[in-house]
Length: 431
Image 1: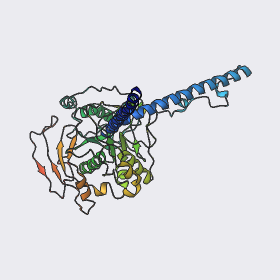
Image 2: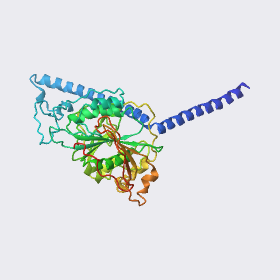
Image 3: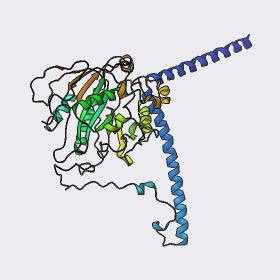
Image 4: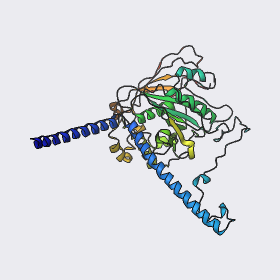
C-alpha cells in the first residue's frame, strides 16, 4: 500500500510542477505582450551589462598588455617616451575629434547666418525630472515676448540656419510634456534655431500609432510655415547636452544614441528610435513613416529601412553628446504589435505604397501658448480609405483657444471644409 501511495504522489507532483511552469510561462508571455516596452528595457539592460563586462575585460587586457610592452621597452631604452612606441597603445579617447565652439566674445550680426557651434552651447544640461504643471511652464515662458502663439520662436541677433518643426506624438502623457518643454525651449534658443512645437495627440480606443502621428504632424506643420528640418521627438526623452544640435544635415540624424534606461549604450546598430531628424526633402523622398504599425514596436526599424532604401546613411552625435534621460512612466505602455516582423520583411516593397501618399485623417487643431495641438482619432479603416482610391487628405477643424501668452481677448471658430484645409496660420506669428 505504501508503495502504491508513493507512486500516486509522483504523478501528482509532476502535474503540480507542470501546472506551475505553465502558469508562470503564460504570465510571462502575457506581460511581454501588454508591456513590451518594460520587457525590452530589461532585456537591453541585461545586454548592456554583458557589453560592459566584455568591454571592461578588454580594457583590463589592453592595460596589462600595454604595461608589459612599456616595461619591455623601458628595459631596452630608459629614454623611450610615448611617441616612440611602435604600437598603438593610446586608446580611442585620445583621438576623439576636437570640437571647437566660438568664444564668449563672439559678435552676432542680424544679417549673417547663425553658426552651429555657439558659445551659448555649454554642453551638459542641468536635468530636472520633477513634475511641473503646464500652467507653471506657461508662467515661466510668458516672460519671453519673443515666444509667439503655438511656441514659435526665432533669434533676432542672427539669421537661423534651420527652421525646425518639433513633432511630438502624444497620448495620456500630460505629466511628461511640461518637463520636456522646460528643457527643450531654452536649449533650442541657445542653439539659435527657428522652431515651433507640434503635439500630435491620438484619442480613441485604437492602439497607439506613433508613425502615423508623425505623418499627420508633418502635414499640419507644413501648412504653417516652409519648415526645412523635422525633429521626431518622443515626449519622455530629455537631452543631456545642449551641444546636441537640433539642426539637420545631408544625412538623416539619430540624436538619442545613448539612453539612460539602456545604460547609455546603443541597443543595436539599426536603432533609430527616441529622437531623430530629417530634412523635409529627405522625409518626402522616403515617403514618410509607415502608417501600418498599430501598437508598440517596429516603426523605427521600418524608418531605418526606408532611409537605407533611399540611399541615405544615418549620422549620430559623437561621444556623450547623444545622451538622454527617460522620464519614468506612471502607467502601462502600449500593447505589442505582433505583425511588425511580417511588415518589416516587406519594408522595401511597401515603401512606395504606405506612408505620406496614403495618409488619411481628420484633425482638430487647438493653439496653446507653447505648441500647436493636433488631435486625431486614428482607425485602420480610415487609414486604408486612401489606399482604396480616395484622394481626400483629411479635413481639419481649426479651433483658436485663448492662451496665457496672447494679447487677443477672444478667438473665433474657424472651420475649413472637409476637402480643403487652411494652408497657413491665420496670422503671422512674427508680424
